[in-house]
Length: 158
Image 1: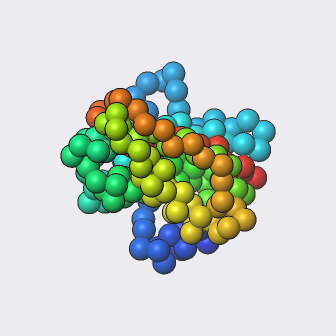
Image 2: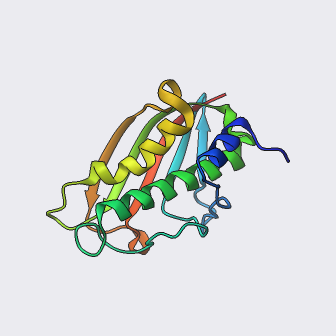
């Protein structure tokens, strides 16, 4: 299987996609398409090839820089799910919106800087017209498996 233009761009950025995440139950899946919009489930840092911290709280044991890298891994996991569903990432017409959830202490305020790890990756990968998106970055008291970041989103697809 040859690489798509988007995957070639990822390689130029020094990044690779992980295997798509397997969901533990039949009652949900990685993404659902309605019309031209792909709704992507929350993805944590499921990228075994990246040297990142996979558990912990921002504002306690993790730095903003570490959280940024975790958010980037979440974005790569989302891309792996999209590729598995669409067959080719060139079918992503636009990143529409991201919801970034950050596992953090009550006084932590840099959620947007953490979630920039995903936003910056999508912007660099797809360019300003297709990669610029709406976004929310919020703090959470806890996330599944004590992961530092979880990201979901909507993508316009062909």
